[in-house]
Length: 78
Image (cartoon, rainbow, N blue to C red; front, side, top):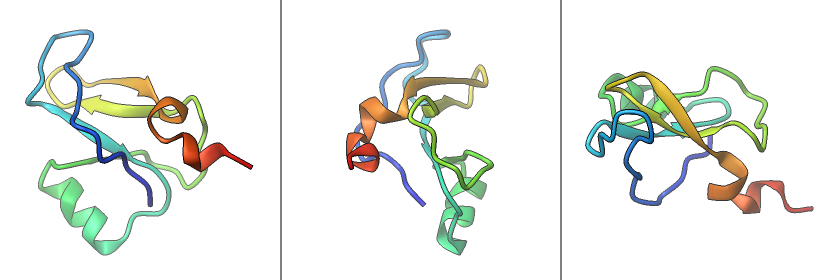
């Protein structure tokens, strides 16, 4: 399970800052599932991590944005 630790940026679609949460990629742990249920993170729904996957999700307008490789480049270094 992987998520960014950076402060969420405002949503480029609706401008909301307080409704943006990090997207968690990979197989979620039980704590990850509880965090998602509390609305603290968004689960990506897959175990494959793609560099172009969303890094952020806006719960207000349901828009995913940001590129995972830009937020977490260490995941894609060889």
